[in-house]
Structures are given as C-alpha cells and as structure tokens.
Image 1 (tube, helix red, strand yellow):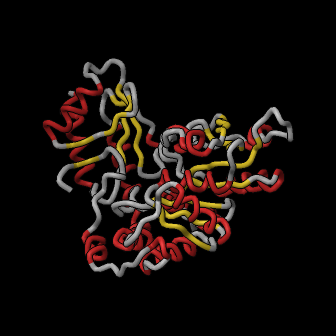
Image 2: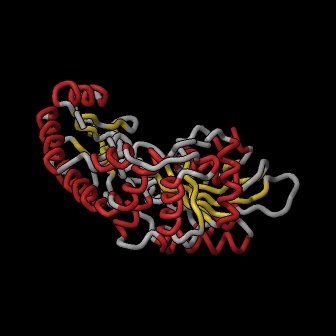
Image 3: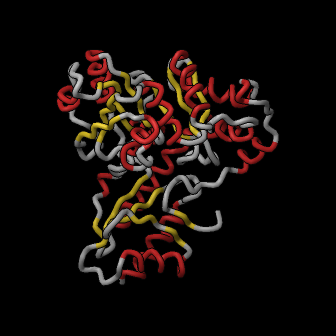
Amino acid sequence: MDTLDFRSDTVTWPTPAMREAMATATVGDDVYGEDPTVNELEVFAAELLGKEAGLFVSSGTQGNLIAALTHAQRGDEAILGEDAHIFCWEAGGLAVLGGITPRPLPTDPQGRMDLDQIRSAVRGDNPHWPRSRLILTENSSGGNHGAAIEPDYFAGIRQIAEEHGLRSHLDGARLFNATTALQIDPKTIAQHVDSVSICLSKGLCAPAGSVLVGDRDFIHQARRTRKLLGGGMRQAGILAAAGLIALQEMTQRLAADHTNAQRLAQGLAQIPGILINPEQVQTNMVFFSLADTVPILPQDLMAKLYDTYGIRLGSYGGQKFRAVTHYWIQPHHVEALLSALREILN
C-alpha cells in the first residue's frame, strides 16, 4: 500500500497471490450456478464453519440482510445488541427493506446481551405485538474494542432460540479474529447459530465479498433473497479466487495483526495525553482517546498525521480514535505511528 492506513482493515489491498489468482480464475455464470471458483469458495466456507452450504454475496451488509430476510418475515421482530453493527451501521436495512422490527438490548463491555434479558424480550402470542422470530449476534464485537466472545455465550443463545422456536444469525465479519484470539476452531461457535456471515475483505485482504453459510434449505431460500436484492453476480469467480486465498491462507496469520495491535496499545499507554486500557485489546482493534487537557482538536491531529507523516487514523467521535491493524501494517509501521503521535503531542 502507498500509505500507512490504520482507519480499518477494510482498506487492505489484495495480496500479490490474490491478484495472480484473480487473473487466472476459471469462471462461469454464477447466477446459473456455473462458476466453478464461486462454487469452490461456497463449499470451502461451509465446511470451514461446519455448515451444509454457502452463498457468495457482495458484502457483509448484504450477507446480514439476506440472512435476516430469509429467517424472518415482515412484521417479525429481531432481538439484537444496541451496539450491533447490523443495527447501528447497516442503514436500517432490517426495517427499511425487510419490515423487521429491531429490538435492541443493552450489552456488556464485550458486546454480549444478558441472556435473561433476551429470554424476557421474547414476546408472547399477542396481536398487538410483533412476532419474536430472530436473534442476531456478532463476533468479534466491533463496537466493543473488537472483543472476542466465548462459545458459551452462543450456546446460551442457542438454548433460548430452541426454547422459543427462534432462529439465530451470527454477524461473523471478523469471526476469524475472534477465534484466533480464543485459539478455537470456528465451528465451535458456528455450531450454535443457524447461519453465519463471514467477510472476506475485513482483515483477509480480498477486494470484496462475504460468504453466508447455513443448512441447505436456508441457503436455497437465501439465494432467492440475494436475487431479490440485486445481488446476483455473473463471472464472480474473479472475486471468489481472492476469497479462497483469504480463507485458506489469510485466516492463518491473524495472530500477527493481534500482536501488532497489542504493541500499539502498549506504546500508546506510554504517551502523555493519551487514554487507553491495553487490556481491552484482544484482536486487531485499538481504541484510545485524547485527554481533555491535550491542546489539539481531534480533527487537527488526524490532519497533521496525514499531511506530515502520511498516516491515516480513524475517528470514533469526540476525543476517541480507532486504529486497526491488518496485513499491510507491520511492526515498523506501528512504531511510525507511535513516533508521530509523540512528536505531535509533545
């Protein structure tokens, strides 16, 4: 990459291996089910997560929306965390396009809803109320420092869903970051939910795309929903080729990103005027704030970083910032950011 970009792990460029695979990919018409590279990706993703089938979609947002529209109908209700990505950052698609009412619940510092509150939120059969139909979860929790949530939480979700005849979906945009941090197989978590959407372009370097996985009947219906949303792609094997490398290779190196994030957090903690708790850093996200006594505005700090040092940093509102490590951020890049911040704040 031609700049040091800490804003997100979505800014990553495809690796040289991905570009080569894309250039030589065998393709067909995916809407007809004839693209062999897409088919291979869908099978691989499903097997990786212990599900029966997969569906290649254009983005994580589309994957989550397709899942919700397939699991639930207009007038149904989805229970989810108040800081969930699908609730806060996906343009209200649940309600706007699906007619599905979100029921947001408070979450703890790791992004977990209280299981008893979930159980209490499930509505009875009353014509005045929307029908409880779906529980939406997320791992890692992007709004909570990229926290990695343990499998027992999802086992609890599954128990509630089974008790009340609900469906469950996991926004697993960064699931592999979570399972890397927890040192567990992704199936350990995926087994507890009906469907999972995994993103290929967040931290895994693919240029675009996500895969939605679940049982065969669900994916059959999800394919219809994808078409409804205009998500049918033709010679999509060019993108799927990069996605295969993302899942086969890039998932195996995420621990390096986590190490760099921890290195950054520890360094930030030593800079006067920066507020951070390094213990909150579990994966590849580092949230920190400027103390009120620091005589520089957040927007001026970001402008200085870019104009003088060629470093991009993400704003998270107020005095808060987010830095995300990824494949194109190496240890010396972390040191470059720390050095720049020291110079600016001193």
